[in-house]
Image (cartoon, rainbow, N blue to C red):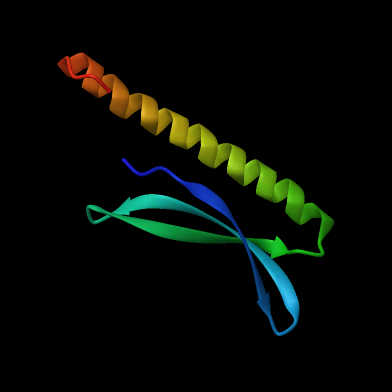
Length: 78
């Protein structure tokens, strides 16, 4: 199982922009998906990053519990 998420700041033409990323399944493979949040200078960008990362964390915990619960139900150690 591969769960992960994070923040990336990328500079384009002298301006810094913020993306968040996470792993997701696509066609049976784990791929890194990026989502643009906003310019680094924008004060609202920090709050948007917080909200998105909170959502990613909740989804990650839910997925972990789903997978480990399935293992426990089968009698395997997680």
